[in-house]
Image: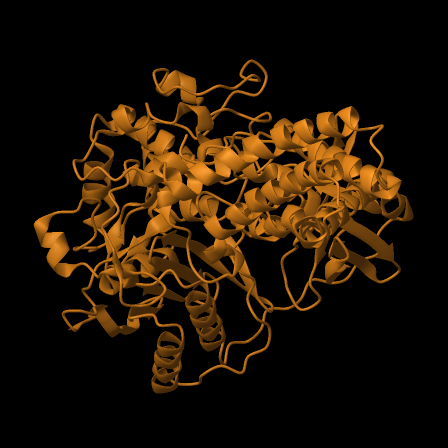
Length: 631
């Protein structure tokens, strides 16, 4: 049944915190004019009004430019001083502030959250043995659910204090596993760290960042607040049509996504990383702190070697043997990508005023290729043999156990099952038979693409009797082949049943309308079954429609999904009505069990009703029955 399976693909994309993998090879533009022309072509083809670009080397800005329109209606061009929303790049400033305070002896990343801000509510059932620490908030290993859509939808233009903002949506700040044992991206976590910074400094977080980070880095136009002066320099952010603007998004947890900055600001910010904590002689962080920002201590594979891991709001992206570091960001109608090559001393930032995934991905490809032109490639790690015992122990099927939005996990767990197959040359992985990848061992436990220098797959030490792997940022648990195939076959059978009921419905409706001797009672049995199938399909399709921008990899979903409206109400109502209709249908079938009708018709309707009830039980277990996206 298509309606049951269709949303799964989009929810896998939605829950992933991984950045897009870089395209291999280097056939990109060779000069700045070629690069600009290629970017202009992408903007035109994706209906993206404008972009701001900064390309830097360690000691200078090589190219800072605005391309296209900042305001389509007013025909206002993007300039080097046009302000863009940085989205999640904003989180990096919380990490820098925490490292500054650690250098000053005012806090330690190993401190617990409770010792600093006991009034900030969160729930950690493992607090006695695995307390929530500041480092978990920055490395995204807190175990928190991501912020609920309702909180994303808040748009109060009156700035609220961080303390008041953290009172809201407490339900997302519940540790779902012991902190420090798995990674799952939570937008609220760095905001909790920002509350600690306010406690440690006695200053408002935004004021601290302005004085101790923006000012010494000469990020002269960067800031967190939407003022009249900011409005005059701000780009509009646009819907996929490239014409209709979004309103300004006044996000309550400002440390998480709210920074506005220009290409000129970002050029200085990039050089701060390349100069390893300084900018032209002004030291903001010690080199050791920058290095700490680029490593992880709490992700499951920490300590195993060079792995694709999330550091302190900083992660790697491979372009062949080169490893970029940085962060990206997304808001409605805008994307930002910031990346730098620490060893080669080059970096870039690109900001667009459209939420087009395609535009940002393609521009990112161009920039990755451009930045690695004429650079000597780092040596690849040697390929090493893997012990036969490890191959035997880890070969098999694995299910994802570190979801980002918990509400989507009921779908996600079915389509993220990975199969690991070892041979003499290395490791192969596949996802439900698709997305096959080949990996070579760089140690007994780490596996990389053959032309890359960092690992993407790690064989983790067993924990509590479970065999675990890390794939990208995600943690997976070994499960039996029987469990995997029973789930897939069960979903397939239900899909066939639901689809067959909907396909046959027009036939018996026609017969009822035009065949005088067609009896009512078989129609009732079939009608209730078909209605339950139709409502289940409708529920799944409404979710698909709600997240269609992500499903088609076109644009960021609208925050109106966090409000009560006809779409979100429809999702809730259909999730409640399809199991009720299915149970009524089963009662009608039982009541009419002795009524003369074709036995295949009768049992088909019963099986459709049972299938819908089985789906409802599964959905209820994972919190999808009565789903209120606005809650």
